[in-house]
Image 1 (cartoon, rainbow, N blue to C red):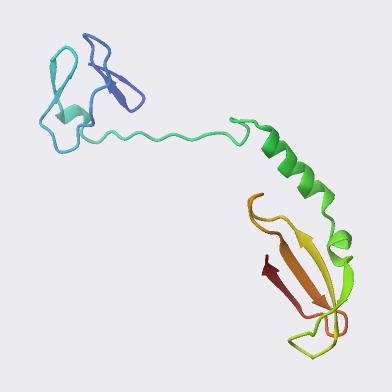
Image 2 (image 1 turned 180 degrees about the vertical axis):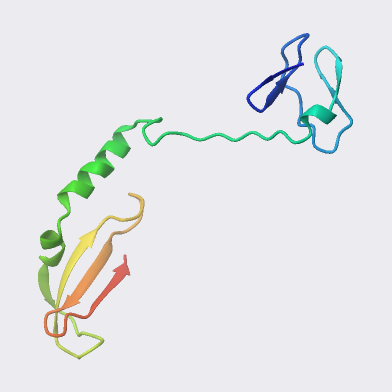
Length: 123
């Protein structure tokens, strides 16, 4: 039997064998070879991926959005007649961002022009 990383393969045919947890033997479903499970009882499969392992145009767009959103940009917004829930002022500044998936509504951020109270809603 050959072990590659934490995966156990049949030496005879190369078939991937089932895990050894709770078994006394590992049996190949292809060639019916049998192996003692004790040496492999504590093996586990652990995988990790690098951040750039699966490049896509969507991930590239996400990084572009991050670089273009500055604090000044977030503080600029249109002023509307909306009552502040904190101080009762009649004007709020707002801006929207698409934070969820494209088929869902945008998130609207409100800031009171008087007391600077902030809240958000999802459309």
